[in-house]
Amino acid sequence: MPVIDKRIDAYIEKKADFAKPVLNHLRQLVHKACSGVEETIKWGMPYFDYKGNALCGMAAFKEHCTFLFWKAKLMKDPEKILQVEERGAMGNFDRITSLKDLPSDKILIAYIKEAAKLNEHDIKLPARKKTAVAELKMPADFAGALKKNKKAQTMFDNFSPGKRKDYIQWITEAKTDATKLKRIETAVEWIAEGKGRNWKYEKC
Image (tube, rainbow, N blue to C red; front, side, top):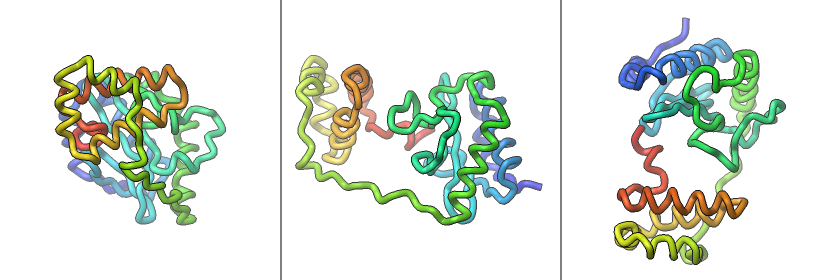
């Protein structure tokens, strides 16, 4: 029998009706694919640990759910379904609004098992490269967009160096001009609301 964390029961119960079947289904699949998984809460969202390390996690927001693999960057992704570098949402499967948005159970179980093997073999994610704040230059188009929104400009100026760096790095790392423009638009909207780049991770 799987070991259930009642905090996850409470988390799911508080979410919108569209999200409950998605979260319950993902939870069941994780336990089916990896019998030794342990449930927990990290960063305010349900997570599943295996062999002492994070395996995968899920979350629900106002209009969508997300599902992610902690070591997605190391997975083979034979079906070409994982969003890793260019993501439409916090997780690796874009915005999930119903069970229809998920890959088949067979595929998801195979991916969960692959992620579990990475933990079984204690394969670590590569260390993240630290980028000094001084090395990050403010993109001219981002600066221009902030200038047009006085509230966002004021908020950004009052952010800590770390918060400003998070936004600048997110925008400069965009692979295409279209992605960059979309991120700038989103950033200005979030900044005007006083939100840091990783606000979704902090509160689900």
